[in-house]
Image (cartoon, rainbow, N blue to C red):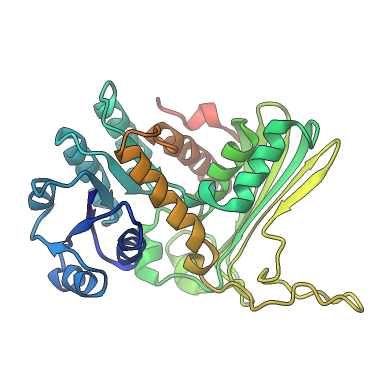
Length: 334
């Protein structure tokens, strides 16, 4: 099949490399507002460069990957749907939840599939955790712990436009908690602090946060996030039931150091980047998209799924600023 990629920055170029290695993908069509970015990707991974999204959508592509700036997501999703071309779009659907809801309403009734990029759903550990929950082998759940710790904060320009740590970082934890447990979040309480980069505080954001989520069956989920984890990129989940407990990310590249005598685990070089930690998951995610394009499966992560994680992020942001519990119903507008 022929796949188009809109946006050839860091993640777009990474997707171009991944797609170029899939047997089912015969050719790529690339475009970016910065022509040199598309040209560089084409030289490295192959593909035809065109000068606009319109030209790409008219170039006979079977599916399109949206990896452009967040502000462009709504328009590019809708352009793909209008052209009848299956769309994969990196999260978020839009910069604000109001815009995201507008996109959802605009595509209601269409049979053009749309997949939103939440790659943890394709990581083997999280897939196995979901299977364990669904099988009942853990018994009734009582506690979930989810962690995302970045080795260093992103640049000030990114922070200023990110929508805050809950919307650009924690949202991955929120999505995977819903997906693994099969439950919905009904209430949150969030706290945050600033003990690192001053520009994060100046942007009105926190650099380290904690959130307690109450799920609709009474399970408690604890989410921990930080922009500062000098030892590496740390993504983990613990799931505790009344019969058994399991962990995702408990492996040799875990960026933790044990101080217990005689313990040599973890023994590997710590993960230091999200692309390192989730290389296989990204490949599985885009492989799934090619199956969506082929009509072999429905979208594994819909716009509606992505918006649910967004409501949790909005509730946590409000909770942080107002120092109180917030229900999802309080922030949901649709």
